[in-house]
Amino acid sequence: MKAVGAQTPPPAAPIMESAPAPAPDRAEGKRYHAATRAGMKRVTVVVEPEEHRRVKRLSADTDRSIEDLMREALADLLAKHNA
Image 1 (tube, rainbow, N blue to C red):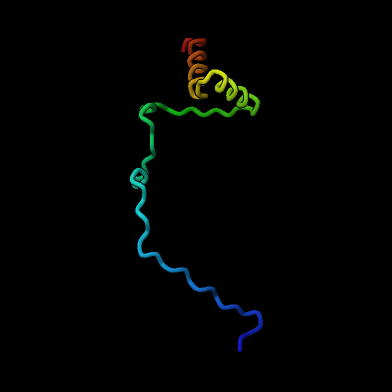
Image 2: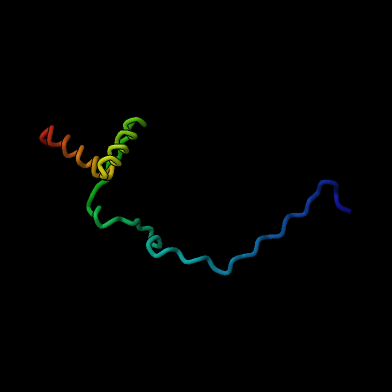
């Protein structure tokens, strides 16, 4: 006789014969880098939501990427300070 409230465990899930092969690019833990960014460094900046909206709008209005706009802004800043 079973005890009240006792439950039998659900059947175990079937065991897979073999795991799927990892994707070739990820097999060695290497990240994908676009050829156009070879040798480049990434710069991250935190901005206010309104500033982000304005840059995003400028990007759409000028048909230029945000990355392109930020590179122009950085070049202008460095030129301004002769750096």
